[in-house]
Length: 229
Ligand code: DC
Image 1 (tube, rainbow, N blue to C red):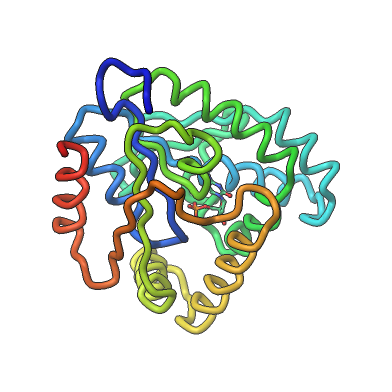
Image 2: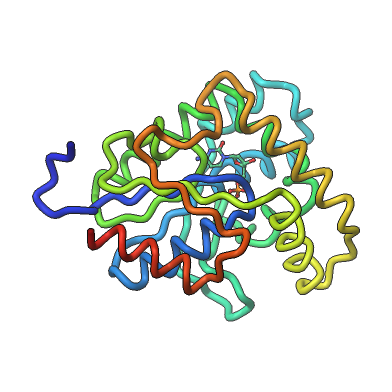
């Protein structure tokens, strides 16, 4: 049980890629006046920095060293181009670069490294302890904040999630094939759920919501009902 005098100060939302976690978390945070914090951004930033530095994604030692040295900042959006926030890595705006196919293809591998997770978890706990936060990821309810006041696990079929990601990419003007997105999503699901450390899985006390056939508004309403319950 939480020691917090005010209920629901930390809301953990976990689930696979494109399950609708970020949209739900943003809406929920806005509604409650909480901070929205997407922890996937940090693993993506470390992956991008590694790729740019020419470090092979399989080089755990160098990637881990880089992760500890990286300065990652998430700030309010500076442009009205659909971004929910700015992601600044070592002073550079990489908001869209961290969503590239190259990062998608390598982020699961990088995020399975123990040292990388350690570096990122420390920062996530620092931010979360300030309270009033909706934190999104894969292991927030199980590892980062097992004491979270409310834990949600958002799921959807891999086909539905791949279709969402495909449409997002096409809307941004990228040329992608649905089958490729689906294959890449399956591969990431596998790595994220089968890794030894902090694998993607619902916490025992998480409430599981399936967004395959639920609209954004319905999902939000259910989540708000749980916050108020
Ligand atoms: O949510 P996302 O697609 O932006 O996450 C990118 C990758 O980061 C994903 O493959 C798994 C990893 N991740 C993680 O391991 N733990 C988290 N708390 C958040 C993301």
